[in-house]
Figure (spheres, rainbow, N blue to C red):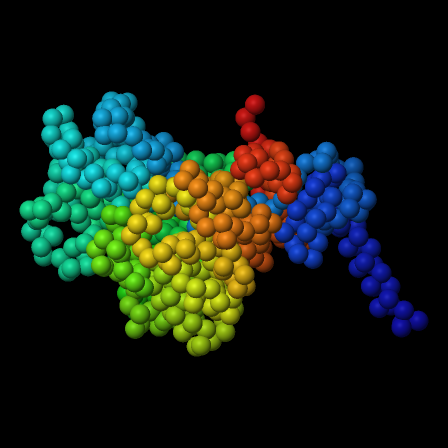
Length: 580
């Protein structure tokens, strides 16, 4: 008789499991559900228990898991998919900008700009401490640096510190009052190393003209009034709500140890360099962090392995915060491509200057840094815009792969120019391409501020999504909000069409919408180190999902861009629905 006992125990466990499965908290049926699980990508229904996906399948399969206490939602044919994931978003910075004066990349003449600044000064929108600060400035303004000076260095502005911050968050313009506060003058410029001297625009007499980029922008940013803890918390709340309204339930914050106003491009971290991480922690403690945040710490581009210990001490301060992880570091390999900044590192040169931009990392030692981070189990996320920066970033990651096969996922973000020799390197190195494909447009930036200044061959491979994909690269969706809109729908549609006001930006680099839907789900989850927890509607993963107002697999490209979110769920709980 004893031989039957194990079988009886097995039956008891099986019945217990079935009973547990029947206790679904929530089921949604009669839907068009994209799971982003390649084993079962399209289903009708989903069951949720204790904030996790219990099962997906047919209506009959999922209805069998409901009992009298289960909430049942009839989707009536609506499209449901995993919560979207942004692999590069400065969300709290975006939250701050939601309530601040912002040009949103609009270009107007200088008389209209002055009129708007006057309005924003008077209603307080531009006022930060005693500084007037306007964000979202188009890079096309910087060629007018001298004209900006003639307007904003005299009259009613003569004693007012004025800062115009570029939408790229790498560039800006400051009037003489602000430049003086930042210690930027002719003598300083003359004392700087040549590479850093190029980060500050000058007049013919050597005086600063107000334009600053990268390290030059850092000098201005660090003397801007810092937001209070209360303001940062409100910005975090606004950021979470706004992202949830876009269907976003997770993101990588790639500069979380740098607060607004702190130097970023040549940041030398200390144990006190916690930046905006406390705001995420405070929001989590209030129960309002309805998103997974993978907060990265910026490391100085020329850091050595021993320097990482300082960042480890920062990480230790924030262990165990719900929905917040600190999985690694972010490094700037270069700057930006557009004229007149031209600080992105090129393999060739800019036609107007014969310069190659500035490579911020040290190729001789960068591999040591990446390998040291990899050995700690940290992911490395690298800002690389120029083709030389991309090549040297891949070289650094290649060194880490030679040292060990850790399985840690590293990524390169932006990838505006990529030399064809690099396309096939991403897959074997396990490097994710974190791309802002909303920028893949024939517009003022690409056609006027890039095309005339780089080689035709380099320009041909601007944002080369299809070329990377064809060589097996994994693409993750990213916005770089508030540099541009966080809307995944705008970006997905743009990746499909690459159309802009000045034509199509290399039609050969278009990619299909299904690829982009994976880019904003499973692939982005991998990029932020959370693919085991989120990214697909697979049994056991957290039940983060969105219900949409249209079938994003079937609507036109124009209709795809205008997709609206009807509901966003985080851990099986509804956290966003449009106001009625």
